Amino acid sequence: MPVPPLNSLRMFDASARSLNFRKAADELNITQGAVAQQVRKLENDLGLKLFHRRARGLSLTQAGKRYAASVRQALQIIEDATSEIAGKNSVITLSVPPSIASKWLVPRLTSFSQSHPDIELVTVASEELANFTSDGVDLAIRQGKPPFPLHLTATPLSPLNLCAVCSPDYLKATGPFRELSDLLGFPLIHDSHNHWNTLFHDADLTPPGTVMRFNQTALAMDAAANGDGVALVPALLAKHDIAAGKLTCIFQTADTGPYGYYLVHPAAPEKLPTALIEMKHWLIKEATTG
Image 1 (tube, rainbow, N blue to C red):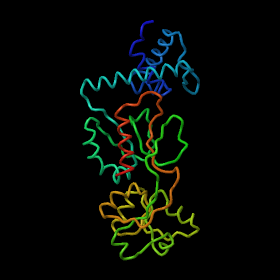
Image 2 (image 1 turned 90 degrees about the vertical axis):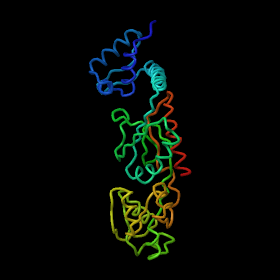
Image 3 (image 1 turned 180 degrees about the vertical axis):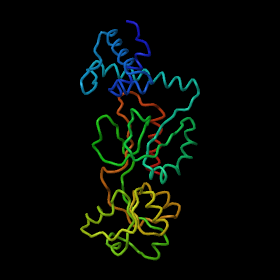
Image 4 (image 1 turned 60 degrees about the horizontal axis):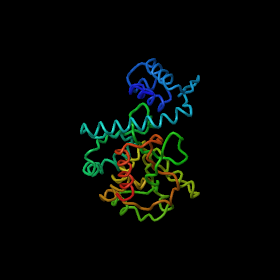
């Protein structure tokens, strides 16, 4: 039989990824009715039912799942070939929490640009969960632990590995601090994750008073670098300021197991874009060696 029109395949692909005709229509900037009509025509032409239409939304039939994977792969090949022949850079939109963006990612972006001049990186600093269907995000860095939702692929980036940090001058004036109990007489700087309270509770100790509390880890680190006390932050975020001499690591907590930072993107049985794979590899390398 003749190959279905590319327009119908694009509408089916968008609907299969979102399982929602309205969201597919928003993505393609057309009406919901046009999407539903083209998908229905495609089903008639193929002589196959691709979707189960239920009151609570769409779900793919077995035939629809197989066809969706092949159509997405074919469209991705066309998209990659078009970008290559047009000489356009690949664009990756990366969503990261603000503290990771400012304390870890931004100091390394020049290195990424130099090693990957063909990839345009758009960084979105946000604590909100990424909606990969509607907000245009390709890849996200988030803090958490397995299991993750089945529709997402999560790749470990870095364990949490909490590090107690303060300014070198603060340590000289008040230290030395070798273990948690040494901090009992001193006020601590907190962020929104409440890691200090958890650490003291696990050690059967009563945490000392709070001198400052911030909603972002980066601000707690800045306060510590300013000599205002001791903050408890992920080692990944503290690396740059420790190397620059702004902070000193007093001690580091034991391994936090599976809890840590993960690279998250939609689960995709089809071929991932080359730029996304390269971005993931670079981020993992930087987290491991940087």
